[in-house]
Length: 225
View 1 (cartoon, one colour):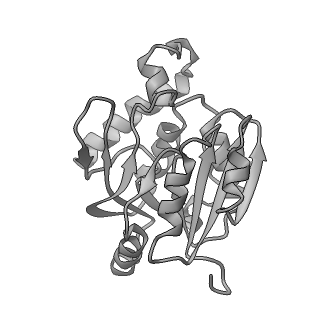
View 2 (view 1 turned 120 degrees about the horizontal axis):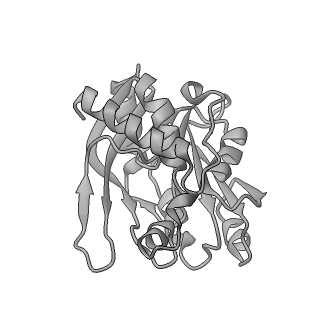
């Protein structure tokens, strides 16, 4: 890390992820570019996630929100990097990802957000990839100065969408179509799996989230994304 702070702050919200979080943390620690701080937010953990994370993380934050967006906010409050990366606790970065992001940021040095390609594989599905604007936070590098004091909404499982609706329309965007991130879709017990199984009542989704979804779709069409 340089004297002005690290280039990247990688924020990982974690909830009872002892069985699988090592994979993602190893993918961070094995990157060829290592000017980064790793901030893991153990949110409402009742297993030994914190003990595992202690062997990897520069900073561990213990919270009891039970919501990923609020855990990410706790990480943002302590981040000191020039650029912010978010990783979910069951996902991982592909080898060389950080170095490629840094190289692209050097070329596109006036942007606020760099979006890059990602892959995913659900249960029973073939590996798929996507290289376009998507309302997730984990396939992007975010300039911390651009985020400023903005934070994720306190929503149950749509906080990504709420944050994207606020931030994307006013951002200067850069794109790197190469796949650099693996999104673990439909892992048993994950939010995406629980939504599919009907464990979340649609009445739990706040009206603001519905409005954000409609507004985001309109913005995507206007921009031609």
